[in-house]
Length: 273
Image 1 (cartoon, rainbow, N blue to C red):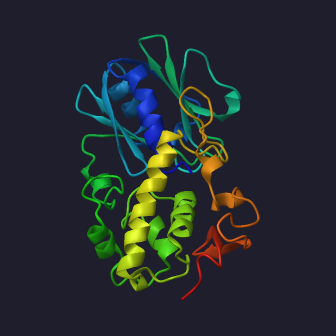
Image 2: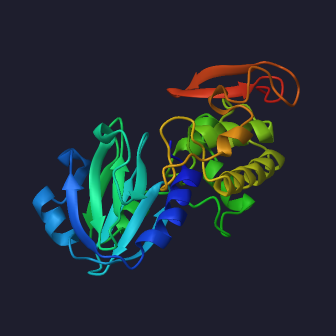
């Protein structure tokens, strides 16, 4: 958390408020949130710059600045970006504030201090580490098959590997595997062509639906206006929010740990073949 649908929602909902606005100041309640360059240089380079666009790649947000720099933000596990004219409560979780010239500010809220900000000249180093975007036209069944080929790791772990596919996290991997009827322990390279086709279809369907529902507020994620998303109300298994029994077959929803990640699935609908 947040995963692709949440980060895309943040991008979509921030853009109307900040595009074309100039950064007038930066307040850092916790300087550790800035990973590069040094804090003084970060502030001097960003202040006075106009935000010309916001793009997303995987779980990263790229704020395009007028001097050709990029403000790169990763929300990690518990981060949110709130745009407002006054600080959101509780103040103790606000780690950074980006002040704009339209009397609003972007508040970086992060209870667990995992989120990061970087100011870079080139984003290629970050982009090169990420796999294909699952919602782009080029993400075909064939491409997914190529990403899974010869992978011996559990399919759940492969889906979480950002080098394999960008943006998918724990919740949506569980949902897609359940919808496709694939056991999370299956080696990625063992999926049949028909299983890959189902997984491809369900990944895209579930991610698009989650974006339409403005992301999932299962923990600390908030939309830029401070409200919650509603995608989690559609969950069948993820985070145990689908209930104790499978809505498809009536069997029990089980929790296991796959490569150190809590995983929910139905052993009836997702048998280990």
